Image 1: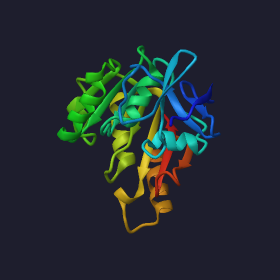
Image 2: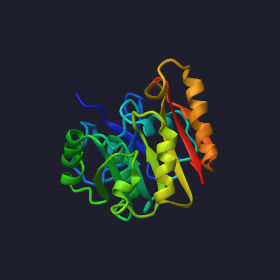
Image 3: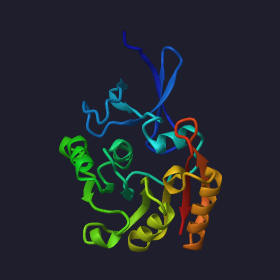
Length: 233
């Protein structure tokens, strides 16, 4: 038996909504840019003639950060983003909903197998604001001819030196005054060090590369030993 929606209201962040169900539970959501189509099996709900896609914080680091009170999300209608580590497209699909037809998400993924899944779930389903790029985020020069200047560089990769990778890409593509959104996966950097030390190390790397750290949000209980860093240069 399905649970009825009783209210959909805007979240404090642009393009994000809160869906309230009759059992009292609330879930994040975004307006579906491609109505009737799912990306990762998420629930579709309708309210006021508009279709929304439930945004699962256990499947998306950005949804986890927002659920944990992230204050700054530098994503709006028309935002141009370079997304490193697009994987099968869960978070990029919700960002696609937010930036709308006037925005663009250059989505870099290294694995050919996962890249094919990304293509099938997003590009082949009509998300025209998504530009797929098969490439290695460690080497931004490899895709420099595909990507134009962006407002935001977002990174979510299971690699060491995550802050270095996002800074290297920012050197190529980030506009002056633009933001980076760094998902730190501590266990991918050093499994022997405490996560807090790894977070400090990555944040210091960003500072050394000329970034102002604006916010750090930990992602527990949705993801262990993960943090979202928002910075500006």
